[in-house]
Structures are given as structure tokens and as C-alpha cells.
Image 1 (cartoon, rainbow over the protein chains, first blue to last red):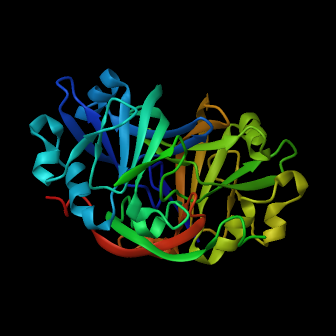
Image 2 (cartoon, helix red, strand yellow):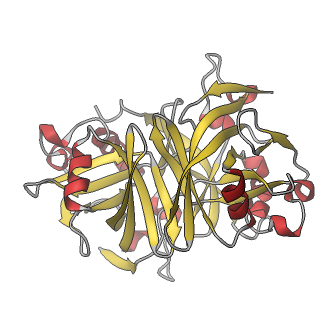
Length: 186
Length: 186
């Protein structure tokens, strides 16, 4: 039997995106977000939501650009740290020992060590309440050779991403393959 | 080394949401989407994106309400089917042998057999291109007893959700727990 949990942002799982931005002085910053997802195929767009109180919010408003970097499992600690600390208190890149690299197509830094980076230009901003939703048009996707198969296609298992579960409060690895989409249900 | 994959909606993983709506005649419909995610904590909101060509799009515009139902692994075939077939061609609920139940708080049907259902009222509509983004305020969350722990909290492993990987083209189960969020990175 189902029971009411009330009006809450409660769904599982959510993604773990590490959002890269530059601040006013050009210092690269990163922040981990779980509120977001692809929102359009053509033009390709991805939405992220951040609170106005965050350092990243100011950077997004000023620079109108960001990267979304997908960490693999071996960087789960760094990704968690990026969701705890603030760029106001010093460089999170330096503290974590990771490397900012300028995105090729937008005014934002990517995380060199993470295997997948999406370069986005802000095309829409919506004030929804506690969070502001930024819709970014994906100008380019950069993927490491190590996560591409022999045909040059993205291999999700090689990315080895992880997800977050609100309320439950844990990160979970990607598990076993269940089958092929648009095929299983035929 | 990273290489350019071009401007594409390519991120892994994405969620698998089964969106429930009523059509003009009150017939319950379901459609699986991978483009979406939580977009605000207060008020709690979730965004989904659907193409104007879909049956669900018309239902959303007319009824301004939807449910998001999270299937467990044992319903991966049904969820895939819901992303292939169209409600224009007959009842997907009937074909899949699943049960529509009216949501308690919004004008939309939920999937009885799926363990987690979010009841949403459309508060914002954005035309982004091929996809329209619908932001829904989450009015209630309904969770099955079987996915709640002894303290009444949502247990993600019990939901046993799965995710989708664009380009890779497969569904993946939730894997092992990697650690506690807002703790691992301290």
C-alpha cells in the first residue's frame, strides 16, 4: 500500500553533476548538483538548478556559461566535497587536487580528470523558488578516449558514474546492464 | 585525452520516469521519459521534457497535471514499452497489464504497481526546441510501504530503480552503495 510522504523533492535516483564556472576574477570553481537533467534534444540542452546563495549562482548570472562534468566512481569523495565546500572560501580545485581546463567552446572551466564534460551556454533562467533553474545549450561534449568503445560511442559502464538518492542520503554506483532500450519492451 | 563528441544531448546516466496523464476523454496514459529531474526544493518541483508530437504533450497542455512514477527493476520491460508505444493507438496500461489509479492531489493517473509516484501540477511551460519543458510542482509523493525503512524513510535500494544511458542505449540497475553524501568528502 502506498502512503503519502507529503510535498517533497523526493525521487530516486538523481544525477551527480559537477558544475564548473569562472568567478568575476576568472578563478575556476566547481559545485556538485543533483537537481538537473537533459531538457531538450534539439538544440541539445541541459538544466541545472542552484540556490541564489551559492557562489556558482553569481558566476552563472555573470558569465552565462558552465560545464557539467560527470565524475567516475573513483572521484566520489571529490564530488561530495564539491557539494559541501564553497568557492568563497578558496579554490576547491586546489583542495581536491584536480585540474581546471578551459572549455573549448564556452567561458567556463572543465574538470580534466573527469571522463565526460558538457560545455553549456545559458539560454534560459527561471526563478522557481529556493532554486534558480539555468537551461544551458550544450555546445560541445568532451569525452575521454577511455570511455569510448571501438566505434567511438560513449560506454556508460566505462564512465562508471554514480547517482545520488535523496532522503536515503547515499551515493550508488551504476549496476548491471538490464537490457537494451527501445527493444526490451517490444 | 578528451575528444569532441559535438553538440549533443549526451550525459550518463539519465532517469527513467513514467509520466501519467489523462487525455481529453479521461483515458489514462503513460509515457516514459529520460529528459527530466528535480529542479527546485521549495516549492518542490520536477521538470520533464516531451516532444510536441507526443500524446502526452497534448494531455499536459490540457490538464496541466501529471504523475511521475518510478518503476523498479522488475518492470523494466513495461517501462521500455511505455517509451515505444503511443496512447493514440490504445491503452498502454491495458496492454502492459498495469493499473491506473487516480492521484490523490492532481488530475492525473498514477501506476499502482510502481513503488514511488510523484503528483505534480504544471506551473511552468518552456518551449526549448524539439522538446517542451514542463515544470511541475510536486503536491504529494506516494511511496509503497515496501520501499520505506523502519523510520519511514525512502530506501533507494528497495525501490530498485534503473537508469538509462543515451548512445550506449542500455538500462542499468542501481549498483552498490558507495557511501554517505555530505560525509564522504569531509
